Image 1 (cartoon, helix red, strand yellow):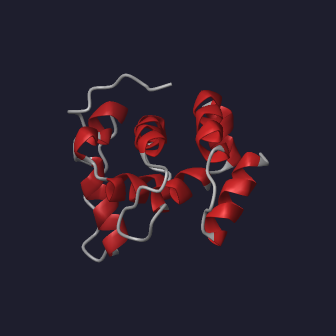
Image 2 (cartoon, helix red, strand yellow):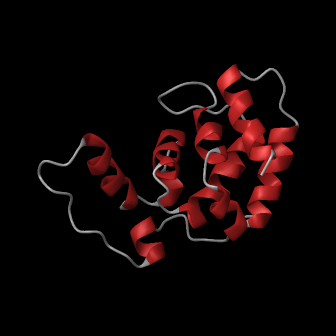
Length: 131
């Protein structure tokens, strides 16, 4: 399932929720999340999606996009390590998959076909499949 959305719109526009500017002393992570929320979702890189998903931001819009990437390249990587997008996605809370069960089923198919994963991803995907 892919949610049909205008990829030229930002999360702020799609969610109709504009966050105030981050405080001057905000961490790099907080500042980056704020900036990424203003970027059109179609322009987000794997790293941008990984970061936002890892912070549980915009999941209803970003998880379908992440699954598109993972279908083609399950080991897609942002700036951290090979498979970091997959790690960000499979480690969302069970409540996320209860809210979007179709996405969880699709992710289950992708994950169940993977072999020879690094140990940390094997553990994470195993926990996801056990949900």
